[in-house]
Length: 572
Image (tube, rainbow, N blue to C red; front, side):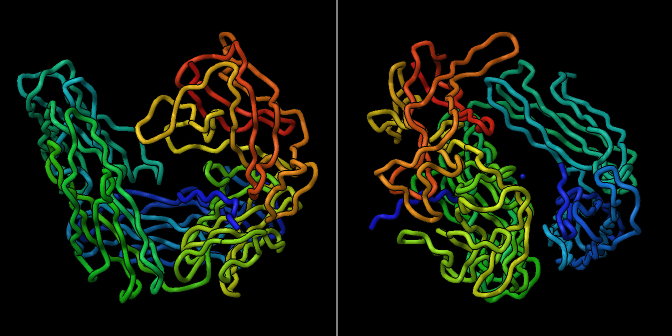
């Protein structure tokens, strides 16, 4: 039997009867610190639930020393804040960028543990130089860094042409007086192709290495300019777990044709854990990290990407945090509507994705038959101790269906693995929270024309054509809630009778702006579950004659419980 499941692989306080951990930040840095110096930043922990927090702190690296201070008044919750002090002590570490992870735990709290990623710029984070690459069609490019104080900066350029600027972005968000963000900006400013030189002189930093002249070069070119989806990669995997992969997407923000020639991996610490290769016929680099044979600790490496881009080879630093094997752990705010990426509300019966780590000990597993069971390869999901149907499970993601009879309001979700109990995180379940599914091309939705094509502008490799007034579209969604007649959780929707969504639904084309309406509402022909699928809804609607036209027409679904997210379609 073919299983009707779609798998998508890819943030008012309410009191509950247990402590709930909240952190003011989960990432800090880069924190500038002198070699053999110290720097301290603070993150506030607070309790959004009942009782009191009993925090435990651990660091993945010896150069971060975390401690808690006495509770003090807090603007966020009435129970007060507990300052978590993060002292960076690099000792004799060489100048460079380092990353560590501090885990904040409380075995009795919901939404715990949580982690704080700490990045340190040992020797200071003022860059040794700044190289900018811009296309002849014009534009700007920026380089950001954090300083240990409000610096004195002086900008000079050849021939006094005003293309270079440096600005402080205000005091740091970690702790006043500790970190000040700066931004160096280069602009083509009407200049033609060529190489332009300048300098930023820096003074006034308490870190000696930050007081220096920074040479700056801007090259304006008609050649390809490579731009990566991430400047650095971080992996966090338990010892003995399967290899994990992250993808680097490379785009060309210059001219001409960008050709990716390949990628190589170099390891600075550890052995054999890092790989990099270009996915054939794409501009995507697949980077893998394998904890096999490694003890818990932090390892570093570099991926070098070769291409015909004007800047030459591009280097991407990689940090690999190997942690001890332990129970399954869900991330705070880690349960979201699947295929949409929003998690504020979860409708009864909706398909959701839960993210965390050590959710599966081995390779991914996926349900192959219907109805869905409550146990998939030893993985079980509970909502307030009520089991939920599961259809996909991997190391860091589990997809499941919120039961149609799940309790509404704030609930606790947890994942057990092979009988090992996981942590609990909070989420809000409502009767319905419609979410239109995204195609993965811009903001276009999973919407289908009558001929099976997607209503998007003609796109190579995609069956696509613009829709027209009078056409009937099928819009796919999740989260519309219980149906009439009712369909049991985990069971495919029947073809006869159709499971319809009760209520007054309207499809909205376009926006109703403050300076005049540019939207049209119409009643759908059908709103309900898609036959032979679990938790997948469809809305059949005929496009009105007076619909807004264009390649990015907004579409939303309005119902008794509110308005869905928006996707776009192309209408000619």
